[in-house]
Image (tube, rainbow, N blue to C red; front, top):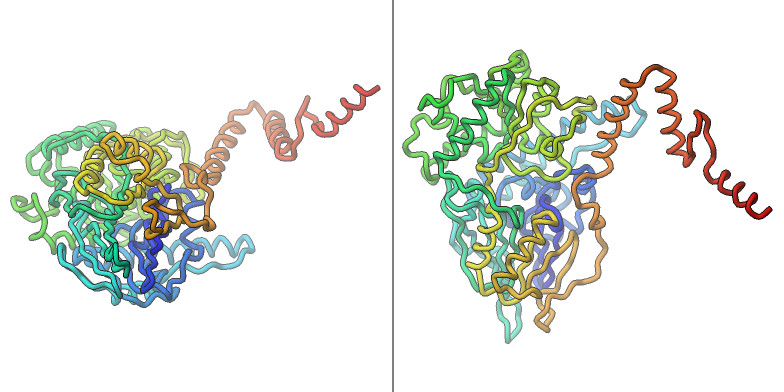
Length: 552
């Protein structure tokens, strides 16, 4: 019985677990990698397994880093059932077509540039036709109800309190061994915080052989805020942004974060805490996801007392490209909510392009920013970025709040694991950056979980769950990326920042002669030479001559 960590191991995105038993093979999640270009390139490569041999797929929730490669899986030969909750299915019917549209649009722009550069055309990872096949394969399951998923495998979904339809998935596998007839596993998915808007607290049973736990906020203590305190924080940020005179841009995740912000803005407008300024929800996906929340309103908490949910005269949903472009006419006094939440794609990039260089504008980040994403660069305070091939100076105020997170913080993750104890064999920590993974590991040790039972796997690691000696055994396997390649920024980020710094230095140079010196020095450095007095001197030959002089 083998478990391979095909994603979200040593990094946050790309969630995908591959289980192999003597009777079947299945996946838990099939998500898209996000962040640096080095990570995102994994999306275009081959899967580390044969999709045609996968018997079924379990999906914890609809976020793209957990579901975004499902259509590619189908395109490459998977034809088994896909088990999801009803809420997840409702969201996937919007999110996967949107993802296909993004793939096709980006490839169209890339191929246009490739033609000019003499490069070959490329194909999108998948199309809308692949999405349609994937959605037809979905089979909805109810929470807390056992379901036979494959030969020797049954599963049960538990509310994870993260987003609409999110689940932790309990898996029981018949082993055929006399002394250990069943192997029980729990895949956490993304765990929501306690008392989250819309959802109950996370639930799941205890006493497992193995638990895979997400670690996004390991070691981080988030500000506890009541709904009133959360709205007060949002109101302060909005008032401050409007007082600057420019627009307020809020990069939003289409699912959950958008609906939470809309609800709080609605209540702040109704109470008079905020002036009823124009609010543009400029994300076709977020608009459709909002309708899914309205459809499932009876299953959600905290919204019974809010009439005409998510809708007010000053809140405008802009679906068409023409409507989106018209927003650019507003130089100030508006709130623009657009996807994506990490600024990696979608319409927010167009609005950033129009506003980042304005000193009176504000960008409010309201969620997790994966390393290497444009959102993470802005959060770090970089002075310049590249968007759609254009260099931009960052003069807008960059703000960040953490009261809308859909993830449990470090203390809540520890509590969640403690409630699952005893765990007989191992707790695998996944879906986190290196610092978060290490912090959660140390915190669990302090709570009495034996160190040898806390495992932090890396991308593509394979473990044998029935090795017989009671210890987790790793199998020697090739890895697609080295461990250091999973961390933070890559050379693409550094190149963009370097090109902006070079341009600025050239523009500040006294004259063309000074600019020429800078460029010659750069060329010299690239060729392994030093520039002295404006002339190139070959470093290797110079050292060789010095050695010869020393001999004589």
